Image (cartoon, rainbow, N blue to C red; front, side, top):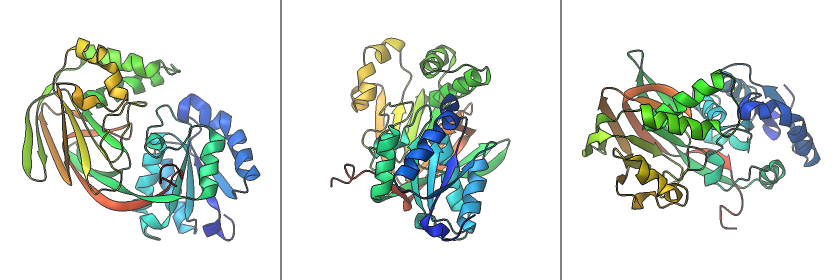
Length: 318
């Protein structure tokens, strides 16, 4: 650790993010950071949840600026570390992302380019935004646990896709084709469950559920606008609820998943609220920011303007 750590960036690099892009591309990223006078100290993650541990250590050592070089899962670990550490309020630490992951959905909401030099330009310009964070309380191995969510959580089909996607990666398969393949495979193996969804104490859905997304930001699944009406600092969780749907409804309306018109599909319902409870029979899996975490029953709440993140000036309308 160095002196004046509050003026330096602590860089957390996930070397396996993006099928190894984190490791391969970091020398280039580090050179760009130096060329832009972004003083930094870098550490590579070595195992799952290591980014959370590194975040806690960085805050304790005095760092007040953190760059995530990874994907949505790495960002999720860092955000959880912000709430575990007790050195300062989470929003006192400025958080930036250089996206090297597979989906890179969080950066899309804030207009942060995936091109490294442009992402670093945003870091150097230093425009920040206080975004909401969701708390997600779920069941895993008969125990109740809580995590924090920066982007989107998915239950049902969404989580089933992540499970299949992870299975493909464990087999050593790489490439952008893996996620579309996982969607196709999941569709023909997944069965809808009877589900009750309660928002702010009122039951809004009690029927067979194909999938639901609950979140702070707009995108998940590698660019799908599943929550196109989400506003990242309005103090509300957005919900997209999808009833059982035939494959041809998806094929012939595929563009609506990406252009923000998902609610024009007849089987899709939109809702908003500060508190969401979901129970299902049988229980369904949960994914949060692209990572699997237990399943139902699930309760989510929102923390208003809880973390400070680097965004582009274009996002702020400057």
